[in-house]
Image (cartoon, rainbow, N blue to C red; front, side, top):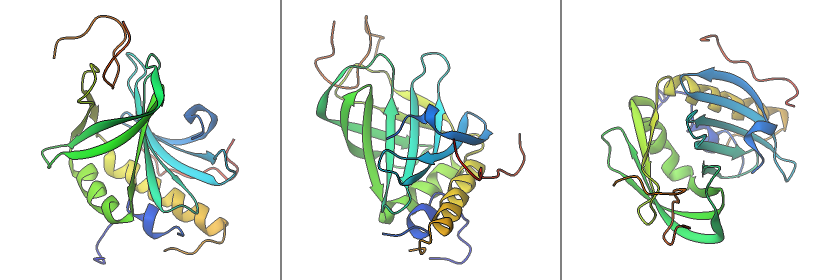
Length: 204
């Protein structure tokens, strides 16, 4: 890896060894539309994450990394979704003008999840930092594309990376389309501060 590579999202899969509700975690930094948060996961492992929520309908996207894991979990969530558990559905992620990411997600209730491993996170991070916005689309459903602002993306990426580094050290880990009527769905058959962030010592 180039020595000049900045600390950030990429650190998640390099600084750590080989979900819970966002609201239940401690938000310790905010910039633009993005929050950085941390807290214990359902399995007891500490989690670092970043996320953005649209205030109009509360749809959100977040990236989460569990200390001790080897991939980053992405979660797209919307309160009025009702996805049958285990539904396989494609997700297209367009970051700025870069080539779209064609991903395979798994839906359950109000959320769709997918993950990226250490090989792909460096590319994602580089795109995330330099773009002004990204779009998330769900091709097989009637959910309109989401456009998410990336103002402050470098700073939020840095906060994400610092969280993983600090928690890994504490754990003794070694770095290694018209709008449809009714609720929209991401799958087919839809039903009718600018200060330096400091990680909290003890997340809530």
